[in-house]
Image 1 (cartoon, rainbow, N blue to C red):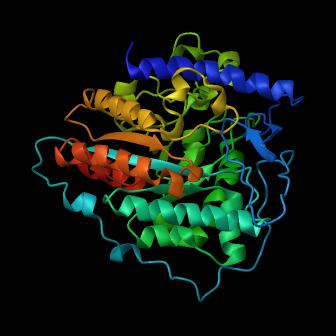
Image 2 (spheres, rainbow, N blue to C red; image 1 turned 120 degrees about the horizontal axis):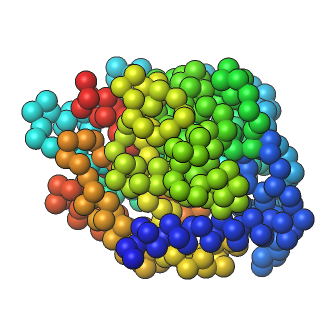
Length: 417
């Protein structure tokens, strides 16, 4: 059994364990919220939240009193208003001023389509950054440290923001998304909505997505915010994302199959299976398809369409700091206490190499790594540098190239134009 198949089987077990943990805490899974049911438990005196959209970081700020997170709040929280983003903040660049090194290297006479490696860092929808400034500033520091470490290897981050983190940047006057852009990294919107929503019109679902997009647009400009991660559920996420102004979707998981008839899903992927176990498995499940972006006209299947309305940019192979543990359903995953180790890195690199073997040289390819913001600590610096050094070996061999999520989309469009 190869590493990717092993990891998929473990993810199924993790989904069951997470749901059981939530039910054991007296929290019942209910439709109407994108957040997977969560439970709060005391771990070493701090609050630890068990969740799976994705497994959410719960942060305690040591220098301030512990503030209990309101896990009962709806994930579709409204912006707290706040003053408009200050005019004295860093101005948004005009799109014509932005450098696009990926496109510069994508020559018309290239013999083979490039294979990219990208990242996702999700600033979650059930965080309280907009209410707790020390929590927000801790997340900002994590992102800044991530930039510092990645810059040493010319590697690229893409940070995708939900309502709380976007609103906090506006309210507290710290635009770290613009800092990311200025440093050559990527940004986007995280759409923690769709999994628990009832069936609604495309326009109604698009309005929920637009609410999230407009906050990020306010921070970096719509021209720099063209993609969304998430939005999977029973509603037509493809049409709604396009209606909201997005050009590509990344971070696709089992939830995205809910909009499709069972005939268009993997065998056994009933609604019940997806909602109880497979909701957060990588999608499409066929890795050879997943690592090659393609367009769809709607969300009724993952069959490429020539008249597509949005680009599906998947390619996810796993979360770095739990990659080893996810194969055995280690208990540390449920308590958010897994340590980042060289074993995680070695197994992830092995999975990257397996994905590289599936690359069709006639199509733009993409491998995606999920990194939680909490991974960026001084304690993890050495192992993160080991990971980046191992990836750099593949880059130097010409097998991979770093790109932001938006740069992958641009390369796909350029290659297929």
